[in-house]
Image: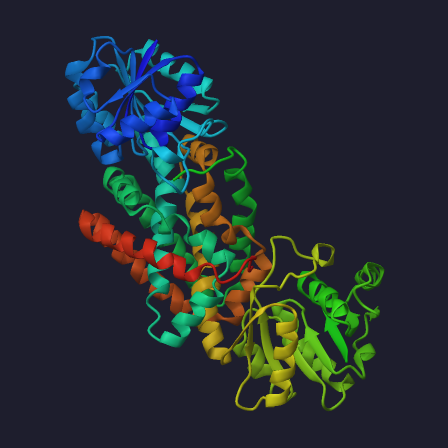
Length: 286
Length: 286
């Protein structure tokens, strides 16, 4: 089976690498000639080029461009494909993308590999990036069952933990545990910058330790990626942000009222609940 | 010089260990006989007991009890002390403690070693816990200069990074980078629990990855410690929480207005600002 990968960054490059190891023939497409050359040099693709036309004849294409380019790239890609080619993507929001592409290409299976690292770009690509991490597929009622099954088999061959749900369920779940934390974390950093007294501002920076470091990590990450999360999952993100505002207000009310027992109960609850959200995977999402 | 340590938990135990290595004679006090026995067995104190009276004759006392017990323990301790004994503490909020103790003991130097780990208790005590981490002293105008100098010398001998400021400046700075993140992080966990659809709730837990893990870490920590942070630094914590509410509201407004360029600018700013808060220390605060 021939597999095309459009977008040879961290995700596309790491996918290419694993798929080559699984003995698929992988053909890469990047906007940059130099990235195509690097992918060939690294030996992670059999061929690579800047023109989508080289994907003519492939059986499956992973569109691994940034979120904002997935739909437009896929629409550009379609005229070059055989009728039965399956297209899947790697975007972190699914509703808008599935809605934009499905009317034009029935054989589209929305996908979200929840793996990554701080760094981006082909040179940070690695083998087994997806192993033991969640990989969500979001078929709709219109998606051919055999297309979903084929993508699912490949996801499992990558060693990822496969989940399937609707684009809507995906977007809401991802908003809670990924897009909301990113905006909350960014708001935390922005808040700390507002201390007007320069001595206090400086001391805060000097004594900030791992508590601040961890809580601010996702808010200090790639701005483009986070902007697109918000743009492509706006409705669910807003829903989760409103809920967060409400919960934060409840915490504030308890502190205002000096209701320490109730605050303690809340903190016991959050301590007890957190482990249920962990231990399901090994690496980082972004 | 003889040094007393009241409260043989992670902080008190680690302090005792380092001070023994620095050739001070260390005498420990714990409410529990078994903790005293363990401290003696570990060889980190020359003697230990449950009665504060054994600290008669020491030159310096570190009060390392939980935040809520520092003032009352120090007031109990005072009748046993020589007139020139210096008392310092290890609490993460300083204003309320300094105000409570200073009228009763002039030789009190508020202190906050910003080191710790997830675990608590003497059995997790370790050598060099304070090395390269911030350690803030909060003398007032009434604190004898030579007492501050003595505590400062010991802090530096521990390898910690010494900062000095007023209790008020400490409490505000710590609120931004430690107490606020704890409440924001706890609110994040509590928010994610509010998804009413059990399938989405379950999927969110399954696919939560390192972004959620890091952002939720301090909100899922010791409830007692966090409740006391709020109780003892209530005013500054509320001030930082109100500022956070405002900033969060600004992020929400940008997303509501689909003002992606302005959101992007905010995210560029938070990405650029974050490194200024890091790299100043090596271990974790709590």
